[in-house]
Image (cartoon, rainbow, N blue to C red; front, side, top):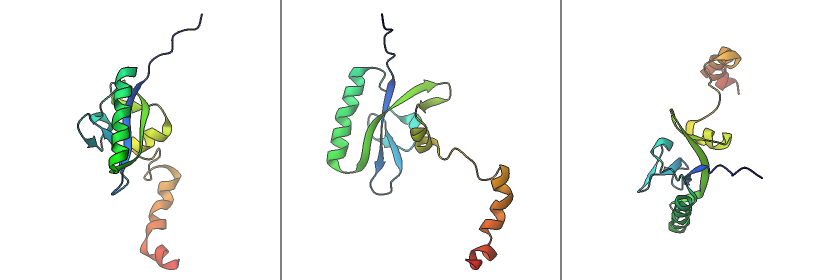
Amino acid sequence: MKPDKKTTSKVLTANRLNDGISVWFTGIDWSVNINDALVAADAEAGSALEAVADKATAVAQHCDVVLIDVEQTANGVQPLKLRERIRAFGPTITYDTGSFAANYETRSTAANVEAF
């Protein structure tokens, strides 16, 4: 006997057409903070969010409107896929640490910019 599939929570995400910023549907409006997102914990709620996605695409204020898999943790809503984590929280590296940091200042100085 196969175990039951765990139901994954979902949120609705998109990109605003006017500036390309990632946004999440709150149940009323769109927010740039994923922790404001309305989380669909079951299939019925997911279907309701799909209907919102269809309307958002038709109104043409947002593009790439999709439901993504998330989990709710003590730190808030966490997308399950790396692509969506990057959209929600930014790059996976910082530019002020490690070997990149040692060369970062010299790469960004006006003298180096003029050399190109």
